[in-house]
Image 1: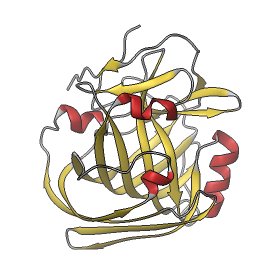
Image 2: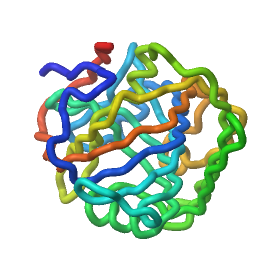
Image 3: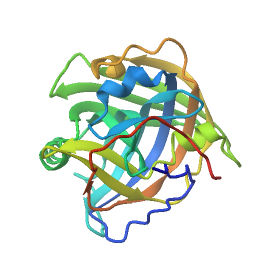
Image 4: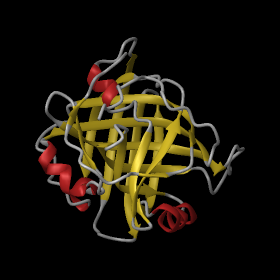
Length: 257
């Protein structure tokens, strides 16, 4: 089985949109961890995706803008909200690299309920705020429902210079063209498509987080191994397809950038 390359643009274009949205003002924080630490959290039929023998835990804050069905135009109020997620990196038996969400804090209750019912995604309703003062962005979140609680996050980053050529790690943690989730008794792959990420260096100014430990993971042992910022991209998701059970082992990243 051949694992797809890590590419800055998808090799699997979405031909018919199931969901549309925009992601704005993203802060990406990542910590390297051994694959065996996160393997129990991944859905059946997937294993940790690795780069140079390690995988990553991601903490990503951003603003969801105009989430909507099919091809547009998205909802201005219910579809626009702050979000912070904890995510892992996976690969399935078909060689598709993806993300696995352990939690997704969101400011609007209706998208939380809809995501739970439709795809069993672990969305959580939270009090949230995203503010910007010059080149400094602050993200705050405190979980309302469902648990486990307490689960909160406060982080601030300073945006730096644009990255002309991202490193293999920077591509690995951002250029992900799908998600894996367990729903309806099956592991599903939901493909996505968006333009190449515009990425910037970023400096972490402050972090007070319990979202990672509320998801069941060990607390990060030190500062992030990677801190990035992006002004954002428009995104399309296609229809989910079933991950066929079968033997799949850990695979190294093979950047093609």
